[in-house]
Length: 354
Image 1 (spheres, rainbow, N blue to C red):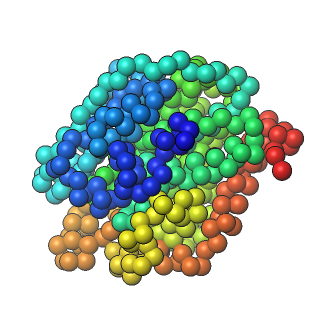
Image 2: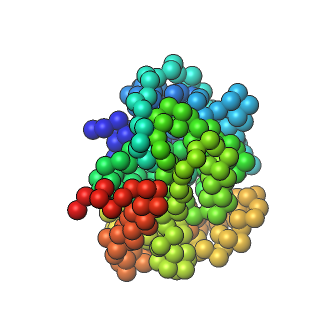
């Protein structure tokens, strides 16, 4: 298994990285052991991260941060994880983050002339009972991996695993680093990658639905020293199946796509046999949008639903639409926009293997 493959989730509710787990699986681990937040190099081996303990958050990369940004990111992650400040759950647990400073990793291998690709997704974001936190990242790298098989000059590196979110915060196991911090971190990450690898271009993607998240990424790239880059929201060609149908988060579209990339990343104890329970706990898109302006209103709504005995499960969507979707069609639409982007970055037609 490659270094990148060993870093990305391969099986739900398995391994040391919290990104591989579902919301209820992690809630069941509250109070059992500390959660580790590594500060490391871009090249720190996955094995060193995994050895930190049974519950490891995605790392922050020191090459992408100055001291003030590192302090701000750690503080914000601590406010959000494992339970968001201001939630009832936060007052019921005493879990703490243990920040671990790891030594510098080995030197990077220069990728001069290559197009370096990575995602900026919210990898620490609950996706209901049946999908792992890193559902967005899994989709992005599912597409990038297939593009890399077609385009020899496309080189994949680890993702930026933190971003801006709202909907996950009331449920816990979700991290929002705010748009301002995201812009600063993306700028630093892009500069670090360009300095270390010396690529001729960057290709940056995400599938996370937040417009504010996407705008923060693009602003960070514009502020960076990278002279040539392209950014793509990979769900853009799927709007008619997702947003237009009210299926925005952890619903049918994301379920069939994750299952397409790797069925082992969908919890078979929930999907599809307990679909009726998933439907009963999902929230409709209009309600979620109405609550998004004030996180505390969202928190109150979720906690009141639990008190009534009709708890929300973290899905904002229409998961029952899954049998109406063709996962291969969705994938091909995502791949098509990716191919167009790479051509715009100068990957010639002859570079696409047939």
